[in-house]
Image 1 (cartoon, rainbow over the protein chains, first blue to last red):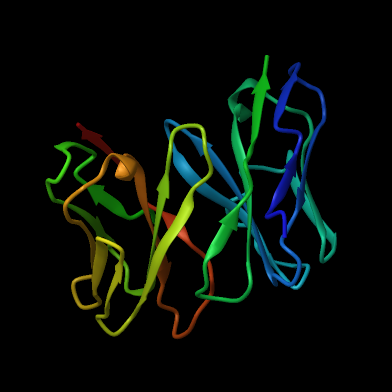
Image 2 (tube, rainbow over the protein chains, first blue to last red):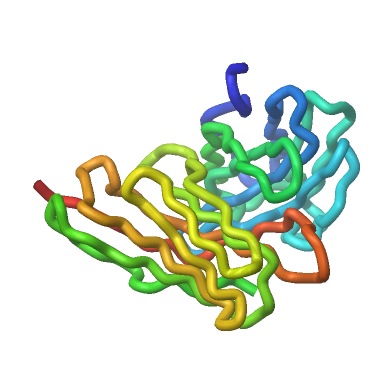
Length: 113
Length: 113
């Protein structure tokens, strides 16, 4: 398996634009997580899914952020409209079951100017 | 609530030992440890479940004191490859596994020749 695949690896966008980050989890993994990493706040859990169903989205900063998982092999994180403070590295991770290793994708470095 | 890690940073010479601590103000179900190298994704080290277990991974081991809501990561005879930022991820105890990991503030470890 190629691991968790995220796209794009880098995204530079202007304030106010819509941004969509994509993630393909490892096949057979039931859990999918979206994290955001910044120097100030560290690694924050935004939302996670179990069997494509959102379980906890309490970490989503505000209504500008939304996440979907239409099927077991694909998830998106959308920011609309984007703001400079959204600049961060966004990681997607997946795990086979609870209390098992989470595999992280290589991340998307988002810069909003 | 984000667990607190200490120290924030540590510099070692090859062959020296180090201990990284992770403390939570809430009752914990499990503790996960990850290492992240600069510009890369976090990589799993180990999971400790409630019950006060200890685990080992090469020359890296960890303990989990459920009563004190603390975990410690022990690195013995450190190697250059151990350099990176270490994160603990804690799962609160709601009476069962939730798989919701909250990561600590991170500990930067630098091993010098």
